[in-house]
Amino acid sequence: MKTIIYYFTGTGNSLAAAKKIAAVLGDCELVPIASLEDTQGAIVPAADRVGIVCPVYFSGLPLMVASFAGRLDPAAAKYVFAVITHGGGGESAALRQLDGILRQRQGRGLDAGFGIAMPGNYILMYESPEGKKQEEILAKADEVIDDITGFLTRCGKRELPSALIPRVLHAVLYPWFTSHIHTDDKKFTVSDKCTACGTCVAICPANNIEMIEGKPVWKHHCELCCGCIHLCPVQAIQAGAGTEKRMRYRHPEITVLELKGKLEEKA
Image: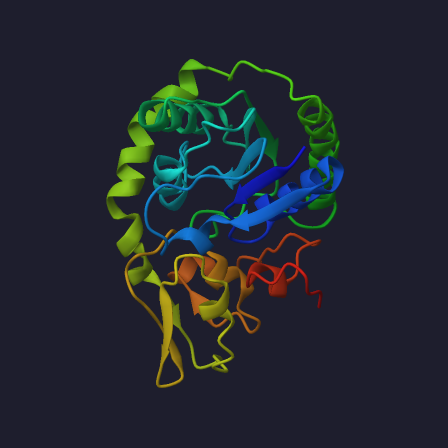
């Protein structure tokens, strides 16, 4: 059975999950959602099984993923699923948001939805776990991925989770988050440590950064994935004093080259 998995990732959690699922399913194409931003019209996947893998942002979908879902037409697919990675905030509201978008615009919702707890990376608010704690979270995530892939292999149907607290958080937090997400990059600064390597430009899924006179400049259509902060090799990018002492995070099994969209390369 041919499978296409569309993914959105900032520091590698969702890509790592997508790769592991793809490896088990076989005959699977991984497509970065960011690569479809400039395409026009409906997105019609030529596959029997279609998946979406992305993180949760403030109890909802990344805006790029929500926009993508509105253009996705999986009506011809036999099976549609989603996997939401999160740092502990839960997946239920984001899954229901995604299901609602698909049903409203395309008349076809999710057959199954899942959540995977992974190391949180919203460096603007907190520090990512490190050391043994990070290892434990990732080991547990792999166990959950194994369970998910077994379910997906047989195209099992699964009712989406629903809980009152996530619905309330989504109703309160998500509109606030989306109201300023694109311009929150005005908080980002770059220090003299910058070497003009261009990593931030290359990994940004929103194509929101350009180099001007050897320094990154943000163009105010940010997705707040924070990849530019985490992946700067000299930690030259900050978002206020709070990020200066916080450790940077990248999923240990995902390379910077992969986050630049070069899935076939390793370094």
